[in-house]
Image (cartoon, rainbow, N blue to C red; front, side):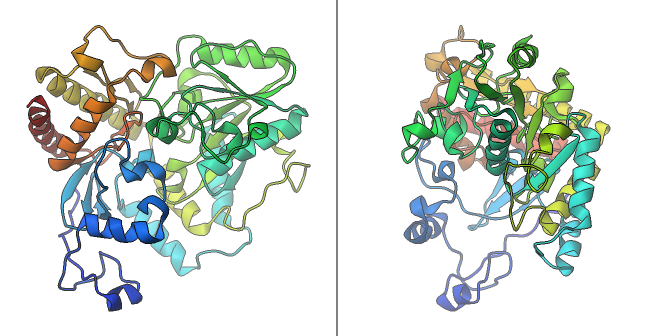
Length: 459
């Protein structure tokens, strides 16, 4: 594996005084006397932010303890406010594929910012990003940019219903499509982590037209189905690959009844390859949802698809979509810079690193008597832990099987790894993300830390 030289920043302490906060100082800018603790900042955040976090999984509820507070990142590493360095296996849940603070991305953002941060008007960069997506993903004849993956999935569902004149949406247990009312049913990711079947605040009528099927089973559709929405690789329940014939069967069944097929590629899009999961598995959806990578780490989302379906969106059609920050100049600049770096050779390299990382972690766990599987799909790595050391438990194929993972063992391993300087997602159903910045040197660092961590779990 080729090395990528990264200069690591020095830990810079900062003061936590009232004047400093009033001046809106941030950890990387201040040079005060004190160094705050993660716990103190988390407690302070909890006074003004529900649960102290702005995304529920960050609160460590499923693994216990309180979260570290990130001050900065560079390459494959992050540093918390106490100055502790971690090998980062979260990478903003896949959004940071090139590594934190990649020079090409940060330079693009800085240059764009000098021109202004938002206009509420069309810009050349949003056109160029849409062209880039369309040129790489054959099914996306047109692309509409928006602000998040959640907005993308909710817009895709509204568009499918408007284009077909039907109401019913079919989704799959364990798939997570963001915080959209109609799709928060038996979801993976944070919903699975918190042990919730859905969420309070969503009335029955909001999900009355949402049908949930088991993943990797092609459902028999009726003529009132507007769309089937699916993660082509289920990356929110430990990375479960599509069974042979599953995606092809969905395409055929949608065609049979005139329903639309929606691929949620918020995670897989431009992470599995230039054409996403649909190119890898050679199945063409009608609509595709994007996020994560296409913003280079900044908030963004997109829906792409067939020209005749996309034309139903306003202002040409009858399905409304709008957003002042849609196509934001900073996010589009970052996205263009990131996608420009992602050549076929880079994807081959990251895929090799994913396989290497999975083998490394598997072998270390196995040597310690921990029955952990690390499935790999392209550049995505999952983790499944057999309960009570049961070596007979195989990789899951659906959500029911995925939920048999040993969450208590994961929590122990999570905290042991964190103590040794490795940051994993604080939930047993999330993916592990390796990227271009995870070099041989980083893997050696990871191996040493993981060996120390599993030794702690053993005892």
